[in-house]
Amino acid sequence: MFKSAYVKLTIWYVAIVMALSLAFSVWVYQETTREIRSGLERLRQPAVIGRQLPSAVVLALEDQLETARQRVLQNLIYLNIFVLGLGAGASYLLAKRTMRPIEEAMQAQNRFTADASHELRTPLAAIKTEIEVFLRAKNPSHQETTELLQSNLEEIDRLNMLAEELLLLAHEPTVQTEPLDLHRVVQKACKRLKALAAKQAISIEDKTETVFARISQKDFEKVITILLDNAIKYSPKESTIMLQTQLYKNIVELKVVDQGIGIQASEKDTIFERFYRTDTSRSKTKVAGHGLGLAIAKKIISSYGGTITVQSVVGKGSVFTVKLPSS
Ligand code: ADP
Image: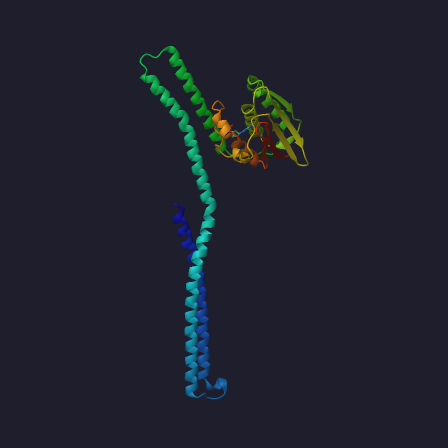
């Protein structure tokens, strides 16, 4: 598909270059011919040079002028052949360069669609297999029926979560300019997730202070929930998660510090890509997720002109830092 687009674009570029080159050549040729003709006219008029030139000299001069005209024509043809060759090569390179961002965007889109359909198919296949096995059983007990329905419900929950995350990725964050007190939102999120953390005997220490940034409450709530949820998911029992805020000149910084499994240096950027999950999280099948949380958080924070980064030591813990313009 892209090959034919390159060729079409190349043809267009070459056509433009050749049109310009031919127009220039025609102009040069016409001007030269005009000059030669008027030169010949002057030679034939004795009044111009004061006396009549011998006809043999006039003929010889006419010959020379005609040769010069032919040489100009020949040189212009060579020039156009050269421009055609050079233009074709340069146009192809330029066409490739023009198309590269589009090609990359298409490839990313294809990858995204393939990953999304893979994530959708896994729970669907699980539901299908379980139902098929259940239907083959002769007299399923009440307990077996309940187990099947419970398992199906879990898979449906996963599908629901995925659909929600995909919607969030497609949705453009509402970039509003009202200053938001981050401390208040963090407090609320900690309260909400405390029970989940308590299940693992993980404690959350909120050391944030009142700082204002220009971000919508809904968007910031989503980001802090993703970071806290991850910190809980990837931390061992009885560890501590700490949240801090800091205000620099015109930047507000929020840190989520955990004592969890950590992230390899080579994966510090890739974890923010869509559907990326580290091997550690994939192998831990009980850790729910589709690898979309950090991609959503990054998209939201970037749309407000901020950044989100991670520092981590494997086996010791991670620090996720969100920076936003202060208000
Ligand atoms: P999910 O948690 O659904 O897998 P995310 O996009 O939120 O997706 O995270 C991507 C990956 O980054 C996770 O699978 C995990 O491997 C890694 N990760 C995220 N947060 C942490 C953390 N606090 N500690 C260790 N690894 C993490």
